[in-house]
Image 1 (tube, rainbow, N blue to C red):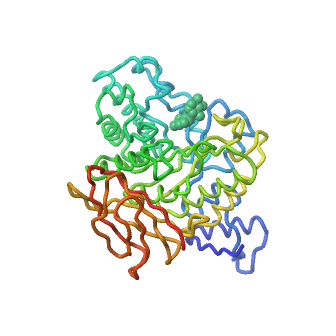
Image 2 (cartoon, protein in one colour):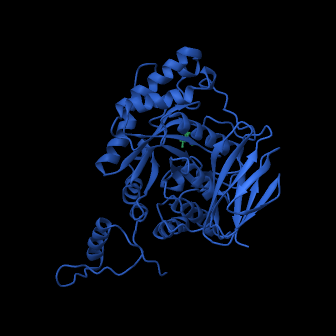
Image 3 (spheres, helix red, strand yellow):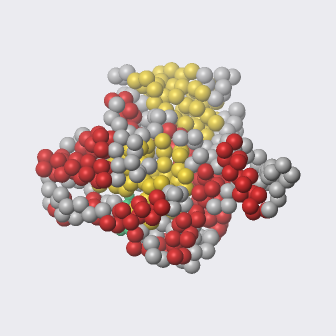
Length: 439
Ligand code: XIL
C-alpha cells in the first residue's frame, strides 16, 4: 500500500509521539521517524486522521463486563446510549425524570475522554405507557416538555441529539408515519427541534431514520425534502442520521454515497448512526468497507457509529452484524473497516462504477425546478437520470443530455463535471435519482 497521508501539524505531532513509543526509534535532536504508514491502529485513531469520529452504542447493563468496556474504550470515541436516554427510560411517569442509567453512560464516556450522541428525544416507539395513552395538545405539550427537560439535563454534554427518530413511513408513499405524535399536527417535528435548540444551543440537532440509505427510495426523498424545507425556513437542524441497519433484505445500496453527498449538499452534516450489517466473512467485510469509503468520500460525513460492540451485544445478534465476535475477537469486518478508515478521505468513487454523482435541488418555480448534478471520481462519465412520473426535461447546461422523460442520459460536453437540468414537474415535485458510470 502506498498511501501518503498528510495530517495537520498537531496530528502529525501526535502520531510522531505514538510512533516513537511504538518503535522506540528516536533520532538525534529528538525528532521521531515519520515514515509514511497506516496511521491508526484503532477505529477511533484511524477515523480521527480525517477528523471524523468512530462510535458505538453502549448498554448500561454491560458496563461491568471488562471485555466489553476494554474494547469499547480502546476502539471508540463517540458513545450512544442504546436505550437509556429514550423516552420510556428518562420519563417513566409523567414529569418524573430518571437519568440514572443515562448518566452512567455519559459519565463512563466522559471520564474516558469520549463524546456522546443523544438518542432520542421524540419517537413513536419506546414511549412510556402514560405517553402512549395521550393525544392532541396534551401530548404535544408533554412531548415538548420532555424534549426541554432531557436536553436541559444533558446540556453541554451532548455532541449531537437525535431530536426526532423515524417519523416517516416505509414503502413508496413518502408520507409521514402515523403515530400519536404525528396526529398532534404535521409541525410536531419542527416544534421538537425548536425546543431542543432552546434547551441546548450547542448540541447539533439531527433527524435520524432507517431505510433512508438508498437515494431512490421514496422515504429517503421524503427526509431530504423535510431537511431542505427546514433549511429554507430556518428551522434549526444541523445533521441527518442514517441509521444504516443492513441485511439481505436491505443491503448497502450502490448509491449510498450519492445519498450521503446529497444530504450534505443541503448544508447539514451526515452521521452514520446505528451501523450494523448482517453476514460474515469477506462479504460482510466488503460491505463495511463500502460504507466507510462512502462516508470518507463526503467531507460533511463526520462520523460513523456501530450499533453495539460484539455480535452477542447486538439487538440482531443472530445476524452477527458487528465488528467483534462474541469473545471480543476482531472479525474480518473489523480489519476492512480499519483499513478503509486509514485510506483517508480521498473521495474514492464507489467501487465498480468509477464515478459518483451528487444530486441537489436548486431553483424552483411553480411548474418546474432546477437540479444540479456534480460528478466526482472521473472526467469521463455517463450519468443516468431517472425522472419521476410525468416529469419532462425543459433545459440543460454544461453537459449533453438526451431523452425527455423517463431515463435521461448525460455525458460531458467539455464544461467539466458540474451540470444541471430543468425539469417540468407536470404534477410531480419529487427529485430525480441519478447514477454514474465510467463508459
Ligand atoms: C433498539 C435497541 O438496540 C434494542 O435494545 C431495543 O430493544 C429496541 O431498540 N432504531 C433505533 C434504535 O433508533 O433506538 C433501535 O435500538 C434500533 C432501531
